[in-house]
Image (cartoon, rainbow, N blue to C red; front, side, top):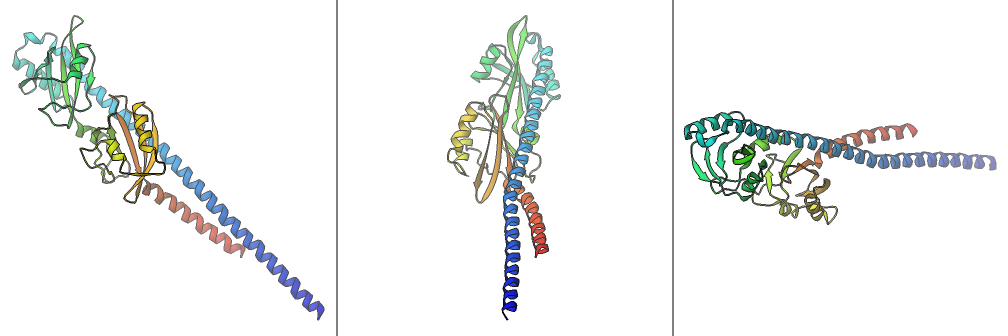
Length: 308
């Protein structure tokens, strides 16, 4: 009797020991899974942010290239106006129309040192943009943030190159470039996840994305006002973005709004203190991470059953 009882105790002890080892192994497996699951999430996030940064660099190059192209078109056109005072209005208009046809300008014109201008339709008026006139006087090319003349809405920017005669500035050649063209350059697709916003260092939007994922819908709201609407993991994010933009620094942050998250990377465009904000909805990352985690979980459960 004692031997049978002893054997039962030994068997029970072995069962308990094996069960303990299996339970300990399963717990360790799931602990490792959750540990590496977080590492997988962070690694995927880092990789995606790197991709956003690279894509942002690409967008920056596209915009710089387009602005450079517009400036070069005007510089080439400058040769047609070496002595504009000797040309008739009809001749000037014809030359302006030819230059306009080479680029995506909405309007193009020529002006003297006082800002008296004639455009490609033959209309005449005076330009009173003080920054443009100051740049012309110094012989520098100029790109405005947003052209704010009373004759135009805020959907265009002004690009200007000075006209020289014997190393003396005699006037300028200018063109108005549609903001919609910039939006088309940086918007991949309306329904595509990634989207881009261009703002100046005053917080004014140069270009707003057409993406349905974008929260920035109010045309009168500055970037700083937009940032105040969102929720952040850290309280000082809006202030930090403001300081970084003022100091021409790059950065990244995460925010939530209406139950949705966004990862944002921003960097200077080096055109009039413009900035490109590249945005990725968190749902894109979450879907990808969840697929990997679900697959890993299935593998872990299957392995655990093998142990049992």
